[in-house]
Amino acid sequence: MPARAKKTSKSVVRRQKKLALLLPGHNEELIIATTIRSAIASGQQKRDIFVVDDNSSDKTRELAVALLGEQNVLSVERSGKALAVKKAIKHFEIEEHYQWLHIADADSIFSADYFRIYRKKLDHKKYAVAVGFVQSMRGNWISTYRALTYTFSQHVNRRIQSKLDMISVFPGPITCFRTDLLSKLDFEAKTATEDFDITLQVHRYELGKILYIPQAVNYTQDPQSFYDFCKQTQRWQRGFFQGVKKYRIGLGRQRIDVSLGFQMLQTIFFMFQVAILVPFAVWAMHDPMYVPVAVTADFLLNSLIAIWASVAIRRWNLLGALPYFYFLRWVEIGIYLWSGVEILILKRFEDEVKGWATEGRRYALDASALQDIS
Image 1 (tube, rainbow, N blue to C red):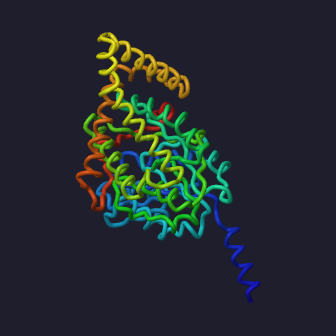
Image 2 (cartoon, one colour):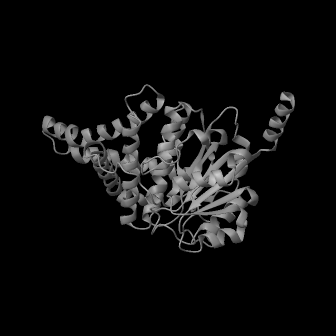
Image 3 (spheres, rainbow, N blue to C red):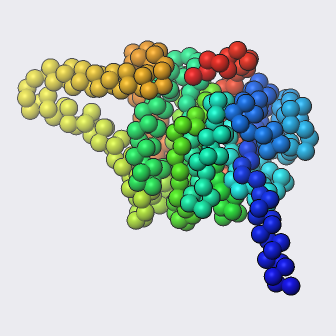
């Protein structure tokens, strides 16, 4: 009898499919059909694509059902992204039927061979999580700025983090989890950024190694207005400091403490340079020309980075972000510092954060636009 049970268990494992794709969304009618078609074109079978509709008031469910069938679409009462994902995993029995689950945003446009690349790279015996490369779609001035920062941070910073096994965030649109890991993750964490919270869970609980797949590129829609840019950045930074506080980042002895600690020290050192070091140099040398020299040197460095990034992704308009690069960077730094004060000192936003924060960021794409998203 035990031998028979063991044989049945092995047959179940053999029947597991390699990879499922889950698309959670709320009011995504402008883009959900395009995202599904993009996934299919990039190598994902239609039967392995699932949508969880978080109580949308538009045609999100209707469009998803038309492409995937009712059996692959779940509608839930308003839950927020993380809880909606948890409900979908249980409803579709993802853990039982698949080795890996890729969770992506509903505005994702996958590069031509995205899922084909993923399948070749995934190794469930060696890795627990895999992340691809997120890139900004072509768009307005904010998209150009984001493309520049995304390119440098992932081609340089994330490659270094990957080598040292200390990747600091699993971005929402490009992350794949080994399914036997799902039951160990808390998808109902009370933080503003569920992807960052889950990243810290994987590191803190030592759930396994992380694979970086830079060849798998996913294009995402960025805010179309300065207000939405600030709103999104604020949510990210509040979620960052919520995670830092919750998991006591910097006080542990894991690699993630080093990785995130270094990121925070970079910002502190930059502020030290601007607020103390540069004024002191001007005073000590009695030469106010030190300021324009320092600014020029920094601008030239950022220009070289912009040129390199333009070549790396063959997007020549990234140089156009230089005139307003410093403005947006200082806006981000200001939001970062104030978010730290809110969470760590004023102790605000300790309650559960729900919602999607995608209002105003979605726009429709037709088939011809997909040929030029990069």
